[in-house]
Amino acid sequence: MINNRSLLIVGGLAAVAWLASNTLYVVDETERAVKLRFGEVIEENIQPGLHAKVPIAQTIRKFDTRLLTLDTDTSRYLTLEQKAVIVDSYVKWQVINPTRYYEATAGDELMAIRLIQPRVDESLRNEFGRLNLQEIIAERRDDLMTGPTAELDELMREELGVAIRDIRIKRIDLPEDVSAAVFERMRSEREREAREWRAQGQEEAERIRANADRRRQVLLAQANERSETLRGEGDAQAAAIFSEAYGQDQEFFSFWRSLEAYRESFADDGNLMVLEPNSDFFRYLRNPEPKGSDSDSE
Image 1 (spheres, helix red, strand yellow):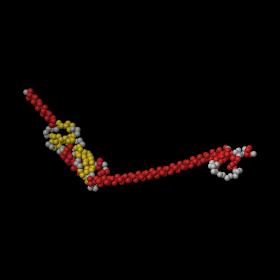
Image 2 (cartoon, one colour):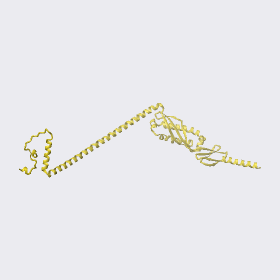
Image 3 (cartoon, helix red, strand yellow):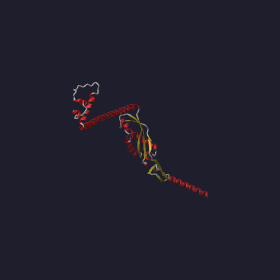
Image 4 (cartoon, rainbow, N blue to C red):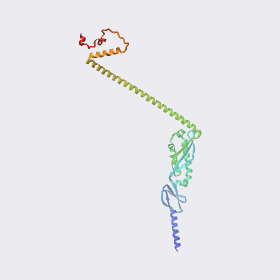
């Protein structure tokens, strides 16, 4: 009886464990789930946490709602002027409607990728087809993908229940037959820009040089005017000092001027002067006494 009772307890515990494992389920923080009854969705978008279901009759399908990456195949697109570019891109997508996603793909991620990739290819083909090669090269890649991302996101939300968060261009290459022409055009553009910058620099240099010359002329004129003013003031002061000195002792001043005249006249050995002996020029040589003295009067 003890053995039978033990078997019953073990069997009961096993039944309880099986019932619990088939009744309770946990949805992880990174997941969303739908509840199915014989393949039909009866509860949508089950949030993270502990939940219950009816064993056997009901099943649970969980879907990863984290941001997923689709690395698309390298594709060849034609630009507006019918020039080929080789584009390598990737897509960031996320499940936002578990019910729609399950109905469209049966919860198969590979099926979802097979449905998303042609749409991405078509959207990029249309985008590159409306731009010329110069615009594709010149524009920022983030701005280039804004339109296709918004367009594809709206379409995929409705068709697959997924959101297209971003489309990014990893690389844009040119076929060999196009590269040479493009590089030549780029070189020509850079040379043209260089000539424009040089011309602008030359023009600016001429303007600065002209301003500097004009400023130089103004400064020289101001300096000459100032020097003439100072020279005039100096001459006036010298004349005033000279006049004042002459007024203090006119006889000494005449004597000193005569000595200066003698020194300048006889500075060289070959100087020759023809004067009358009684000329006033030799007055101080004949009589060094000043005018009005006693000796002169005698």
